[in-house]
Structures are given as C-alpha cells and as structure tokens.
Image 1 (cartoon, rainbow, N blue to C red):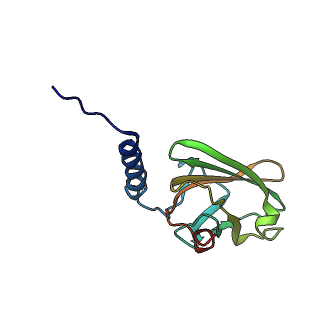
Image 2: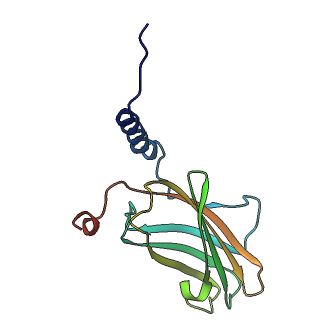
Image 3: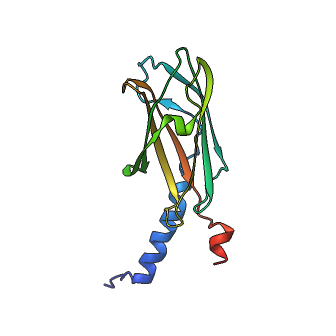
Length: 160
C-alpha cells in the first residue's frame, strides 16, 4: 500500500488556487440594504457609487452614497465597520460634516468618502456597514453593502 504525501509546495499551490477561486464565487453587489429592514430611518438611501470599480489596493477609491432627509441635519457622525468574509477587520468614525456639506437641508444629499486602501489589503469579498447618527446621537440610518477588492496589483506597485 502506498501513501500519498503532500509536499509544502503542493499545499501552497492548492491554497493559492483556493484563494483565487473564492472571490470569483461571490458576485459583486452594488445593492444597499438597511441594517434593520423594519426600521423607518429618517435618512433614506437611494443609491451607491464606488469609483473606480473594481477597487484596487493602493489606489484612491470614493464611496458616494445618495440619500434624502425630510428634516435638516445640523451635524453628526458616520461609523464605518468593515468585515472580510465573516471577520471584522476595520472600524472608523467620521464627522458627518467632513463627508457632506453641513447643515444638510431637507431633500437630497450625497455622503462621499475617499480612501486609499493599503497595498497589503487582501483581495476578496468585503461588507461595509455604515451607521449615521445626528448631533444628539439619534440614529438616522444604517446600511450595508458588499464590495470586492481585486487580485491585480495597481501599476504603481507592480513597477516598484
């Protein structure tokens, strides 16, 4: 009876192939979902634009969220939480007025945030959760959306 032995090189090739295939099994979703489907949030989100897409590590990416409100908003805070597959990997807070013009008048407005993702950011599927509260800490909205980061390194990193 012969025994099959896995060499470290074979294990590395298998693992690398697994990492390349996994992100392609998850479809990119530009759909925005409310954290609580039954909640009647004062701020309604109507769309999301990620520019550029697909997202590349080491390059500036802008997330623009189209929203509307019936009541003016004088200020507040945005909290962003990011998960990689099922693992929480990042959290940050932003002053609402640094992401949109304040005071926000009743009607349509855009919340826009730009960020360069580090070159070491792993490729794959991510979920972003954004919570918006007013100056009195009253929750205005809470949304989630999925995005992915590609495997291709940007030219600036590839040439280095």
